[in-house]
Amino acid sequence: MKRKIILDCDPGHDDAVALMMAGIHPSIDLLGVTIVSGNQTLEKNLTNALNICQYLNIDVPVYAGSTRPLVKKPVYAEFIHGKSGLDGPTFDPLVKKPEEKFAPVYIAETLMNSEEKITLVPTGPLTNIALAMRLEPKIVDKIEEIVLMGGSVDSGNITPAAEFNIWVDAEAARIVFESGVKVVMCGLNVTRKLRCFQEIIDRMDKIGNKASTLFKEMMEFYNQTQLSSFGWVGGPLHDPLTIAYLIDNSVLKLNHCHVDVDNNNSVSYGRTNCDFPGIQGLEPTAYVAEDVDIEKFWNIIEECLKLYS
Image (cartoon, rainbow, N blue to C red; front, side, top):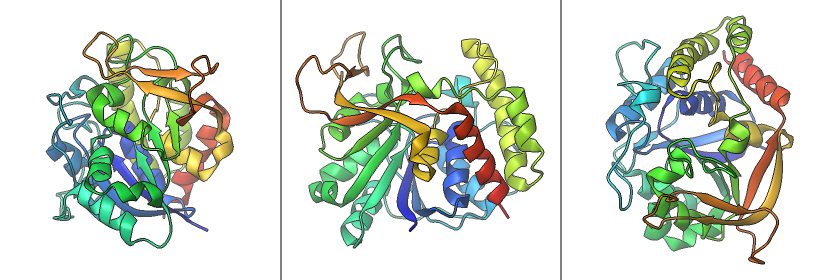
């Protein structure tokens, strides 16, 4: 049975790979794509999502969401993803149009109108998901689980304490983690192990279709900025781990624990404090990834690209 999902993203090179996988793999029923401000402005992220769908003939509706976090001013990651938010590949003139409905409204209405539970997959800041929960609190009972890329068990990538997606809107993240919904957190402590070395790019390029070509073009640019910004030879491919987990959940080792999102105005703003040892004696709020099967992850990526036709 196909897993029904809504992908909430801010493409972004790694978000783009996640979108490719979700739109291609037969075990995923991609109901819609919702866009949030994050890696770039909402407008640019929206254009990137539409371009990817058009290029790969992924026939799903795309909805624009929040232009900014709940409280903070918006912050972008141009230093990683470039001026367009998806520098590297070149796309044909854009024909595909976004839907008119506001993304949080779409999320809430789709959940409430569905007879089956739906999985939400946020790979950017959690603003749209939090807004949908505030708009219609009853949706929490309609969500199968939330599988997100964000947070970290250890150090961050935008501050010493915080991972970018959570740091951009820690207030929204706190709403999501405290919602009572099953949350699976794919954090930096595991995604940093998924280094897209040149041999991985060459391996995927040999597939020889449009999806593999797009993967190569995106990863070549992404690796350049990862090297210049962080010194990574082979940038970590963060966001696709969410979709890989939905395709084969054995790719992750999870720890059920309490996660507290720091939204105090301090140097630790955006930190995800993961109580692995259970020191606080608090109820677990998330399934936090503590390890990943690297070989299996790349096999899943390759499988998705080969399935494109």
